[in-house]
Image 1 (cartoon, rainbow, N blue to C red):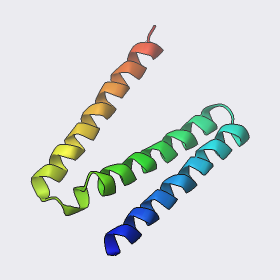
Image 2 (image 1 turned 45 degrees about the vertical axis):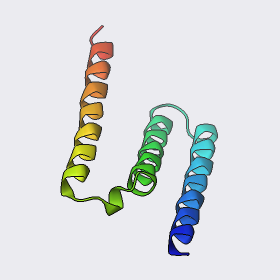
Image 3 (image 1 turned 60 degrees about the vertical axis):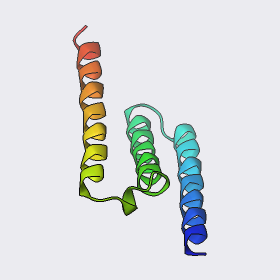
Length: 87
């Protein structure tokens, strides 16, 4: 029963974050809207990683590997942004 409650809680949190994303897309424009939307997306991906991919049940090495993958994506995204801004 505990797993079902946690799945429902995470699903409800994801639905609330989806509503926040839709609201932010209509209410906020420009760089502020982008920053808020990216923050909400980061929160949603964190919930999915932590709960649905069972990182909360894993040992240290798997958590480090997942954090490393996220860090690598941030580095690649930074390179794409730097390339775009220098052209």
